[in-house]
Length: 232
Image 1 (tube, rainbow, N blue to C red):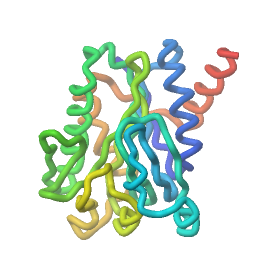
Image 2 (image 1 turned 90 degrees about the vertical axis):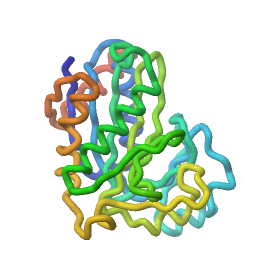
Image 3 (image 1 turned 30 degrees about the vertical axis):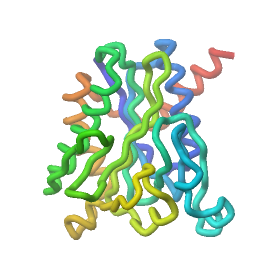
Image 4 (image 1 turned 135 degrees about the vertical axis):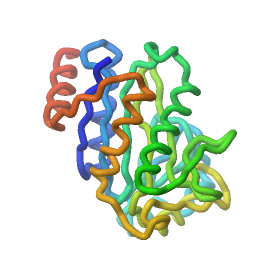
């Protein structure tokens, strides 16, 4: 199964969200193949469907004063932070070809991240009962997805050189006392996000049973625009 992939660079969360939603809807209609988008965002806090108000530790105006945008979104999970130095992986996949098994998909996405960071000398693992990727007691990557008609979007956030102090504005993923970490904190150096994205490609293709085809970001935007136009 072919899967188009593009690295979008730094893109606003609202623009990425609009693109994901458009491409996700197009995937449901069979107008585009499976996709993997990678990117990073300016500072943003997102509230998933399971977010609790007390897990947001600052008021909206206080976040704005720090240059942090707030979004309520349709993904599962609680509250999380995205920002510069954090690699986002947004798979837009038809899970019906993978057995319509949501939990298997989440575990496969964890393995993709674990194998990717291993190429940078970091030994990470999943933790039973918790979604995400961990190094010891510290959380390295968070996962939150949305599934509609067995097509998934949203995805994973891997801390590469993220400002970890930014997580003090929230209770990350609703886990009180959790400590966040990053590749740079663990290794003392920060690989380029593009290199980390490329390190995800081989394990993603293996665990998602697909063949990745590098694609220009503009081509994906064109696909989304054509699909939206056709839908009226």
